[in-house]
Amino acid sequence: VSGIAEGTTKIMLSDEEAKPIYVDVNVYTDTPPEPTLYEYTITGNPNWLGNDSAVIFAWVWGGNYGDGQWIRCDYDGSSVLTLELDGTATGLKCGRFASGTTNPVWANAYNAMTADVNLSSGTYTYVTPGWN
Image (cartoon, rainbow, N blue to C red; front, top):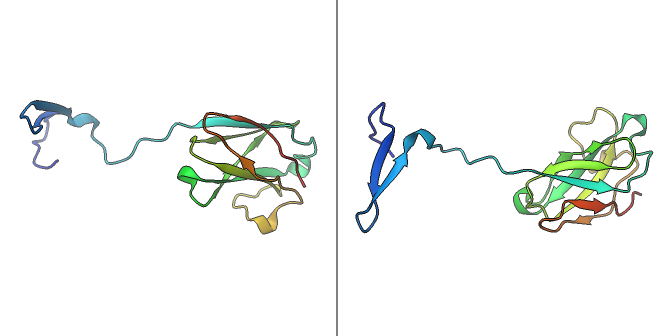
């Protein structure tokens, strides 16, 4: 909307039937809202996963993640991985990387990765398909 006087907080628009529609210009933004993130949990991981201060990343694909992108996982030190996703992903695969890794690539996986994990809408806890 252009041509709104400075200090104006509400404007009136009309729909096809000339009914007024009031818009609060104080809440207008051209930035989309941040997506809601959900905590995903992957259980049953081996206790050696964090040895040597290794870091875990998930390659996540589908939905808003497109063909895939890396998401860092948190590891509890025993058997549970967690990561936050927006609920649109359809799959992921975890990889173990050397301490200090911030931009993982599969060629640098630190001797272990999981099989693919197929994600279902509304399900946030999964059991690891195993590490190799």
